[in-house]
Amino acid sequence: MSIGRPKKQRNPNTGEKLLHALKLSGLTWGNKTGLENHVLNTKRWLQFDLPKSANTLVGDIKNGIPRDRLAKYSNFFDVDPMIFIDEEIPPFSKEFECAILQNKYKITTNATFPSLGADKMFCHALHNQNSNGSILKLFGFISGVYLVYLKGTHSNLIVKCTVNIHGYDNSFIIAEGYLKYIDIDILFNCVLFKWATFLHINYYTQNYSILGYLIAQDPTCSPYSLYKDPLTLELYGISGSITSTSVPDRFHGFAEKQRVPENMSQTDFYLALSDTVSTSPPMDASSPDYGRVLSKIIAIQENNAKD
Image (cartoon, rainbow, N blue to C red):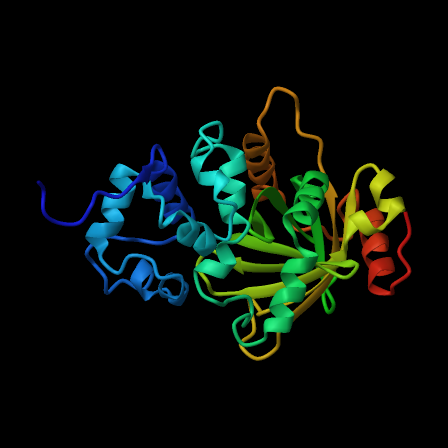
């Protein structure tokens, strides 16, 4: 007769999903418990009475989730337990990854954009307006490659940049961009979300030197925008300055969605368009298309936009 704890009844083939869910959530689980993103440093992990031993967690990954811990793991990731035990949903399927990523904000913090842990009502409103269904609808409509024209309020130059709206993570849409400013190459990332009838765009340069903010009308709230070709987003922006340490940059502009050639991927087209922009000087009065672009930006600036 064996002595000791009875063996756990485990759900087969769930360990790989648990491992992938932890990775998608940006969490680590090994013996280096001093790491900030270790599961044992996550209040939510402790709240749902999950393993306090890294060895126990590794056992669940290797051997499958025990039946008496399935509900706890599901509550932690805020998903239906069936997402783990349904063998027709592979760990790397879009259905599984979306289910985990949709609630990532609840896991990694209790917090974040901009101080969600401090203002629960704001947190609720943000994620309510940017539910998975809303974000998928918006992403399906605006995803793609854009050519963007921007003009500072105290300059007659018009600079061009490219933006690639390529994915979504939890309640946010993500994008990348390239700007040629005079002789400087600037790479930046964007985080987009809905609020009321507006699209809010946080962007930051990849060297973290500049943080900026853009607001545009949410095109899914306007029947006119839904049928306009090309899709055009009118932009109102402010950011840290490239040239001044005391006065922020204020600017207006618009983004026009480009048609991706059938023989190119979206990423390849974005890179090719960025190469074109990199060799194109800022637009001034001598540029062939300057008058059309300038009049459109002035109309946006005066809140009297024209076609």
